[in-house]
Image 1 (cartoon, one colour):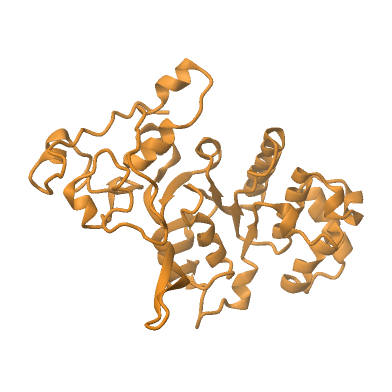
Image 2 (cartoon, rainbow, N blue to C red):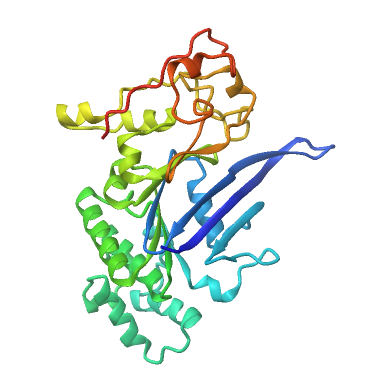
Length: 353
């Protein structure tokens, strides 16, 4: 499959104040700090991370809410930013569905007016807008009488489905889903996910699915990328990701997934207990940003930020435990990097999830 959307060393930094007003020394939050990955046609990539990891900033920079500080975002090989602005013909190709439809839908507009707006902007050639908005509602399985309802008259799930229809109105190729089900009841989440998967098959859409729910990614995503403090620490095909997580942070996240049976518990990685506190995004530590919480940290981890390396085809990890591939106890404790603890435990076994 061809690559449809690619991120190349994307950075987005925010100035949130000044340490010294006279010298104008800025306080900078590196919300996204050198992110690189791609999305193929018809593929779903899950972008997972804690709150504040920068995953939503990736989406907002893609759709033009923020301008990138550095790096490139390419749509089919073409940069989506030219002189700091997005070309008009690319705006319709990449749409977004926000987390909270209660705040992303105009409460003063009916569903008909909400769906007509992207038609006027991105598809002015459409003659009969009423007929097209009705078709969009049928596509997302909502009754036609909803055209004249206001968002306040709809349930949370119905509002989110209207937000999906609004994104579809522009006939995009890529949809960014920014935690589209996190504000919904569990029963409604399943309906929305089923709808998104059906639309992807029928319209050959590509998704960037942003979430903090790893369990959801196992059933939705083709590949999973994990973000921590503005950087991707691991990305892999979904099956391999759950069966053989390599980065200590990824292992920690997977071991914390709640389960309801002893069989599921046996399939999880052995529990990793993090040490220390989560660093402030205003004051990210030097070296590997996870080293203050990592049980396998070495001396080099506090000094050098690791590079992303490929362990197996499509499986990339950013960690000093893997200088030449999967680690052994000898390589972790050897003289290559040294250690500040005298002993570095072997990474936990991966029994699959």
